Image (cartoon, rainbow, N blue to C red; front, side, top):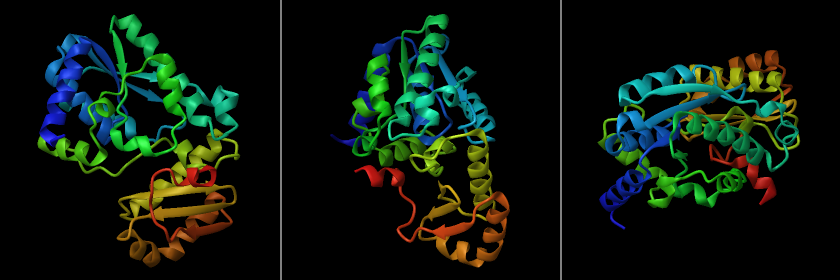
Length: 267
């Protein structure tokens, strides 16, 4: 299907919803979805909702508020409690199921209170190739994924976002902090805070696309090919910083950054 036809198809899908709540993280995908919704759904029938918890990177809420304001859509912030769910905190390979169940149950409740018919998430067609147990929760709860239904890929999301003038069209991919923690290691506020601080430090060095994977006393840094020389130039500082954060071993993954790398052990 031609790219422009996909955008028209997306608009048709969205217009049929009538009213909706958009799960809005402030990332590229959800920003594009919110913008597309704003083009076809009346302002009073559209709401962006950002869920915050210990798994949501610090500082992202401010970016989300700013983006929603620029797009011109109301934003509400809710709190989720996935860390109180044993199935999530225990960090099995099904953790994302429990997280999405909690997240979208809260959003459905908010949508009902606001009189909105549907809850939308920004999963795109490229996500179909990865291991995503959260999809089961979305299906159980009736959450809509219009980008996926329209066949729009991650690359096309960025292209459309640039075309529509969204300022974060080239923002590096992001995900909740729990996605950095190897399966089997309990997810706690202290571990999440350590991961967040380590990753923020790497970003402060000018690394654009980077992940800090937590394997207990060992951490594994993933970055793109352009980031490796920068890591090497700052090697001593990084090692010193991370050992102070509690890591005994600081490693670089030579395969580089890739989404879902922790899922490789279960495929």
